[in-house]
Image (cartoon, rainbow, N blue to C red; front, side):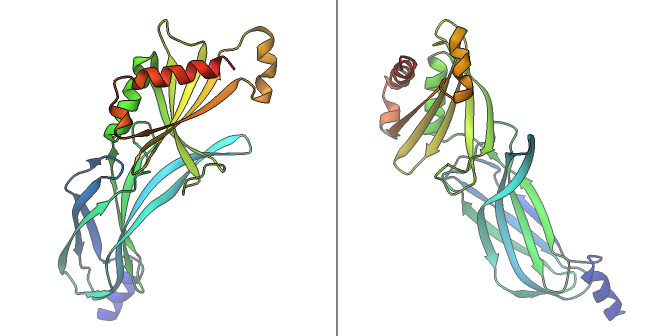
Length: 256
């Protein structure tokens, strides 16, 4: 009977199980997520090679004129070393992990989640998935508010593949704003990257002009788009003229 149970466990029947319980699922880039992993032994003794957490998100990439989504691990956190789990035994493993500063926001449709994995020697690995709510860091939130103050509305947020991005991931998170009201700057859209750093935020702006007449002919050559980079320390972001600085930067690119 013992050998039969081991055989079943090797294909996932009567296997060990895990359940992750988060104390908090809402934080900001660079923030902390804490919780416990509950491990429940199966029908037989099993050799546990490792317990780990993966921080995962998704991004969009184009293949042959079609868009596909891919998962990408942005953080890995080992929680235990090898141990033996007895049948029916229960263990609780507490954890507290710090998220990277460049953790994507979940303001759009792209998820960020914790994937818990239990690596079982000679068996089927157990896993659990828990969604996170990643809100803007206070400095990022202040910049978003400043952009909205000068006449732009946040339209969508997405992670998109970008082979030229200098960051550690194959994608970049873009915040797309649409103009509204009288201060539209004759812009079709404004795409923004908020690259959070220890010292502050590097802000990348991509300005897509609203073109008319012959100017439309040059759109295929990407001559209608203008780029700008602003670097703000956390102290700079508290300046009362932050919105004015961003507005002046956009207007200067419109004159080019």
